[in-house]
Length: 198
Image (cartoon, rainbow, N blue to C red):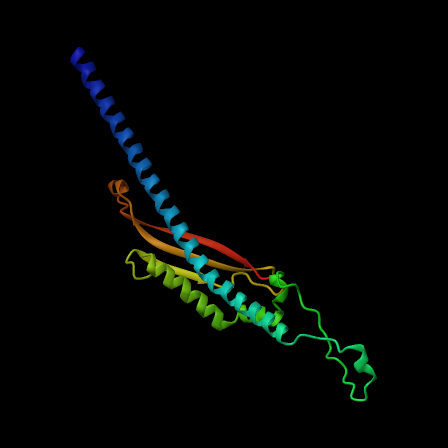
C-alpha cells in the first residue's frame, strides 16, 4: 500500500515539476522579449530624434537667414530737417520684425514648406537610417527585417508640430518556446516624435 502511495506522489511531483518548469520558461522568455521590445522602442526613438535634428538644423538656418536679412535692411527714418530739402527721398517702408528671441515667429509659410519638401524628406530618412545603421539596428543587421520611416507623419497644413514615425521590426529567438515548436518570432519597436514649427 505504501509503495502504491509513493508511486502516486512521484507522479504528482513530476507533473507539478513540469508545470513549474513550463511557467518558469514562459516567465524567462516573456521577460527577455520585454527587454528586446524596450530596446527596439529605444532604438526607434533615438533614430527618430536624429531625424528631428536635421529638421531643427534647417529651422535654425532659416531663422538666422531671416534675422540676418532683417538686420541688413534696417529701416532708419530720415531726420526731420531733411524733409524741407528739395531732394527729399521718402524713407523705405518699414515692416515690423519679430523679437529675436521669438524663434518660431521668424518662420514663414514658405520656410515651413521647405521643411516638408521631398528633398527634406530624403535628408531626414537618410539621417534616421544612418543613425540606426551606426547603432547596429539598421538593415545590415541580419535580424532586422524591416525599417519604416514616415516623414512628415500625418501632416496637415497649419499643424503646430511636424511629426516623424519610425518602426523597426526584428526577428528574435525564443529560447524555451522551442519546446512547443516556436523557435523564432518578430518584434517591432516604433515611435512618433514631434518638433514644433509654430
